[in-house]
Length: 124
Image (cartoon, rainbow, N blue to C red):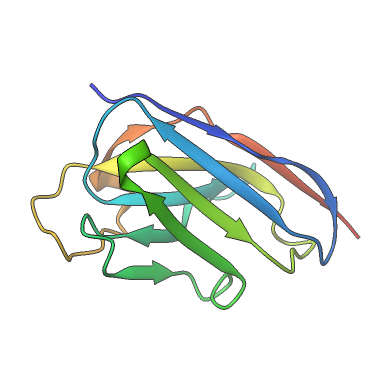
């Protein structure tokens, strides 16, 4: 069982940046960042294949967010730039158990390891 813990959330002004960190207790396969707002479904923000060679970004975050990983440290990051008033949410990192090196999983149901989440708030 791999445990994940997010950190780096907080309150920032619109246009500012934040970097979220996800620390894993062990190795995972593909990784993803999701966010959830009360009244809405949890949505994928960004995801990365096990090899790190392929990434996916939601249309709402493309060009502003960057997902990355430090395999040696079992750590994953989400760099969020140009934060907008619509970005506030509880952000989660998640890991899957894919055997594919290059496939990027975007389906929430395929992720088996989840962190407790970190809150991001953006003031306008």
